[in-house]
View (cartoon, rainbow, N blue to C red):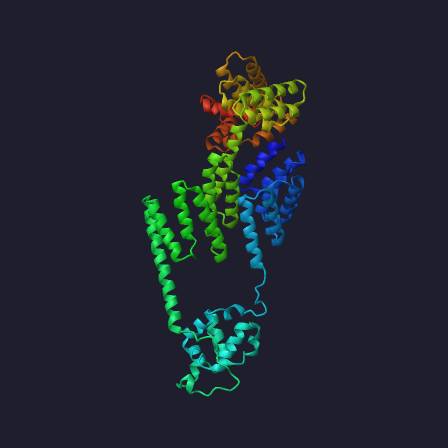
Length: 573
């Protein structure tokens, strides 16, 4: 029973219905409270809904129940990350890697948690919000490139102030009254700061630095002054390299479309050498390796793309694309290794970055492949027959829940045996679980349309549900395959008796009321009552008996009237 609830939860999770998945996993936990997998699955569902506190509670329970199971630590790390407890997440992922050092999901989770932790910590220059703009040679490049601030670089006191700000950005407040510093700040921030005496309003002496008088207390900077032309040349060269890299990418795309895979790889590799800040070169090369069946190389490129993308803070869609491509390669490899779990975890990771329908479909396909593989490995007709016999013994002893358990195990061993579905349908009927029993009876008929027992099971359930017309149709369909089956014949007789009872008006007021209420909920009855033709027929029955007799010559109208009579909607007197 717990396995059935778990299976329903897995199906709901795969469909993206996380609330329903949680309900089914909770039901399974109530039946099997020591099953660590159930807590793990529910933790994943809670995390998908953003309910990380609940996800953390279930993940902790998973680890408590199964301390040597690496996936439990993966769930724990994901929950901590969702709560922004990055240090705890890092510890959880590291513990999992101690158990399974080669687990890709744990490695990826650890890298993400470490990156998030790094982003969440204040930078070393947090004492000044402008600390970063004064660091490195970029400051001198920007000041040299601007016509106004380029003139200030010839003034020793200004150079001294800027050198001081490079060393101690927090000293900015000491120089804010100096209009030159304000002008420089505007250039470095790429904003226009209007100051009373900005550089545009000042007259700059044409004298050379050597001709100016320097205050005795001021020392010229020991570093050589930046060369503006060199900086501009460097920027131009960088732009040219990026443009050339894009041309190589386009050439690689064209070769890929023509299936010239080796040529495509050469172009993408050249693009990477020219510009390592565009991870699309890596994901494109990974796609080529995937087509070539070089799955290890594909995965390496995808991992590099994710790692580099985190460093560059690339678009989440690009990160998701790399993870999806890696998952696709892992699926291909799983056909040999028979291990779909790494691919499933990678697709799930991709969906946390960007919820893409294609990725979701790949995840569902991988989960189905995993389920099918498990079913194939579990398939054993001999053991299935043994479980069916055990179920039969429990059924004879009227121990129906135990019988259901053995029949369910038999179906796991051999899901194509119609007899087991028929037997389990009988158990569900005894337990009053009519919808489950009806589903099993229909599956029995689907597997073997000539198996009379399937029709008798289905008809009996419909009879108990007081759907006498439907039960009659089921019994009659079964008689087409086995005309002398006594069980089916008895079923027809019982249905006819109940239908005639309604036709004669022999129902008690309570029975009539109950049957009418049930009939009005039947979609088929609703369709009949809303059919304009049938509404006119019913009017004729009341006001024009002669026209009503003509209507009754039509078999379809006669059949619909009979359904209304059986449902207690129409009474014949």
